[in-house]
Image: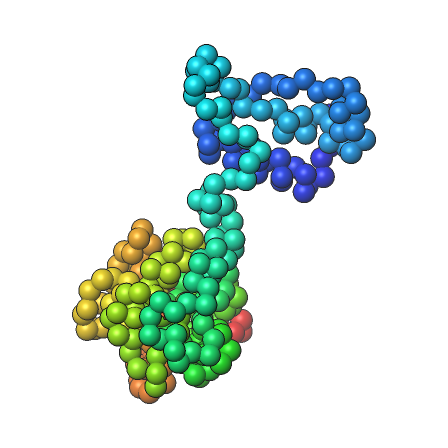
Length: 278
Ligand code: SF4
C-alpha cells in the first residue's frame, strides 16, 4: 500500500471521524472501474484512498420501502452544527455573519466599529468584559486601550500570551460616555456572547467586573460576594475578578485580582512564569 502524505492522511481521518460521529460504521466497497483506479493510482491515492470512496451501507428499510426518501448523499456538506463542532473559527465567523451590521439595540447608533471579540478560537481561557470603550470602538478590537494594556500584563503574569486567550464583551457596541449597558441592551447582545462561548468551549472564563459577572451568572450581586471561588457557566468554570479599568483607578486591588487569576491558573494547571521568563 503506498504511503500517504500527511495532508491526505489527515483529510482521510477527518472524513472517517465525521462518519463515526454520524453513527455510520458499516461500509461496503463500491466497485472501482479500471479507468477510475488508474486515475487514483496516478494521483498516489489508490489503496488507502479507496476507504474514502467506500460508502456507508444503505439500510435495508430504504431499499424495501420506496416511499421512504433515500438517504441524503453522503458527500453533502456536514450540517452546520457539525461544522461548528469541528471548526471553531468557522463557528465564530458564522456568529459574526449573523450579527452583521447589527441594529438590534440602541447602542448601534453611537458606534464606529462593532467589537466582536479577539483571540484564539481554541483558547482554553476566555476573558469577558463589559463593553467597548473609545479605543476599542475606534479599532474594532476589545481591550486595546489602557485597560487593555493592563489586561495584557495580567495575561502575561499568568504565563500566557494575549494570542493564546479569547477576549469578548457583554455588549459589542460602545455605550455612550462608557456608561454601563442598560439591561435591555445587555440582554439583547449577550446571546451572541453565549454562542461564542458555546463554540470556543473554554475550560475557564474570567468575568472582568460586575457587568460581566451579572450577565454570565444571571444574578446581580456585589463583586465581593462572587470573587474568590469557582462558579459554573454552561459547563465552564467561571471566575470573577475586577475589571482592569477599575484596577487602573484603584491599583491597591491588583493584589486581590492576582489572587483571582491564580484560581484560574490552578484550574488550568498553569504555573506562573519565573521572573527570568517574564
Ligand atoms: Fe447589536 Fe449588540 Fe451592538 Fe446592540 S450592542 S447593536 S445587540 S451588536
